[in-house]
Image 1 (cartoon, helix red, strand yellow):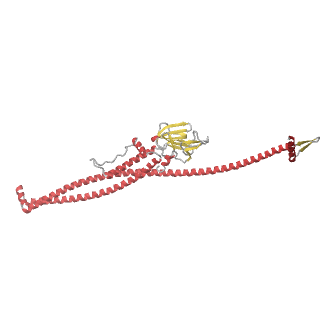
Image 2: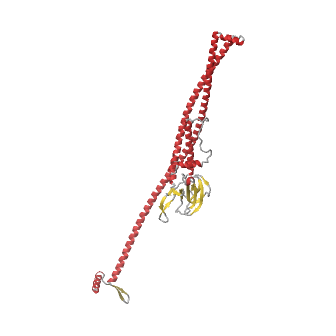
Image 3: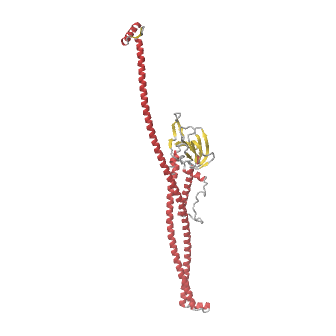
Length: 443
């Protein structure tokens, strides 16, 4: 059976690969090499395998080259798109910065106007009180004058009646030892002159009272206008600050109360007005002024709280946002990890600034962060500034918002020059952009 299969297999090979001989001839001898069908099959199979491998390898190389070209083009397109987006964001950030500066200027102008209006209001209220007191004095004088005038008229009428009946001359003669009637005439003339002078003084007092009443009415209208302007200014100033704190998730009532407890500013909180020393109920204008003073006090407390919370941006020069808050891909390990802050990219040595008033609790090297600055603020808030190239503060140093604390660098675990900025509330990391965006329309 095996012989028959071998004969058929040999015949098949002979059909496609007949036996061949390769002759090698030299000067003295002639030799040949016999190529059997099996040998030719092996040689053909090996050659076919080599050709197929070369074709496949070439195709793979071509496809890889074409694909790599497409990937590079796609990467370039993505890079151009990303760069354009970053430039657009940088333009928007610069526009927001200009708007914030303009808003800050408007806010300062409103505070100055409020201060001037407050002074005018107090002066106006004092003047009104003086005028009211003057009117009371004039009215009292007028009432006394009217009584004197009526008494003089009564006395004059009596004297005239006595003169007409002749009784006055007799009485005067009896009392003064025969004084002439001319004395009675002089007394009557003097009494008439005093009556006329009293009437003239009364008319002058009435005119002065009318003028004072007109002046008081004008002052009340002016005070009402000042009150309206102050109330509008308070609404425009307090509402954005209240909205800013609420957008940042900070309870305004608690914040204001905490700032009020720790208030150490010059002069203390504003004191309510009181123009009465007799325990009288305050007037509507006094209550209105006290409401404005309360709003001014609230505005002042908001201003102090805004300085103590990280509403500012740590980089004032041109920069790019390179990474946001949240989970992201680790460029070194390839896995996903939590990014507890935001990254600002700019040139090496770019100045970095404190975003709120506080105390430096750490200024040195920390694993992963490189050169790190930690600042403790009010309300349980802490900010961190990592990967610095240079530190410009020391532990225990008090800083104010806008103070320079260091320079941007690439220290620690980084892939390039940037600032890693964190905000922590009660030790828990929160998105710093919540505070920065909340202050965009205020500062």
